[in-house]
Length: 196
Image (cartoon, rainbow, N blue to C red; front, top):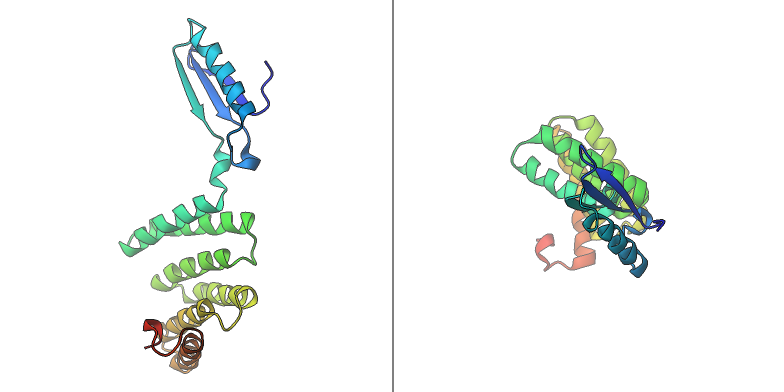
């Protein structure tokens, strides 16, 4: 049988392991009846061959180029950052950003969120210039996609304001914080916990 949806190879020193690899990365290896039939056929090849004693089923590494994988990387990076492990967190933030850029594009709000997270780490480690560029890029994306009246845009303004306050640029921080508060009050109401 020729396989179209899986790959099959013999591995091990003497070819005693049958490796079945799901091969529909463009569909995130979604299961189909045809794929099931191919897997069952490959499994029969292993079980009916006395020289083969094991079988492994896997997917290609392309599955980690998915936005959900980027979210997992980002969440792990946030935890590492919260515990002061900045050197370990930064490459994860950068990998998540790269995946989201490749899969969702630079004009997506989720990509903007990855910029904010990386910028926060850069701010915390004193790399203010690079952080400012990322905060500004995220603000531009959020403003264009969600609108400048959206609470997320207000959060972006506030993030940039905190950066300015961290670098003693209070004259730039204050108007941004006031603008962020005004947006939140208009969008959420003055009684909302985020506007008090």
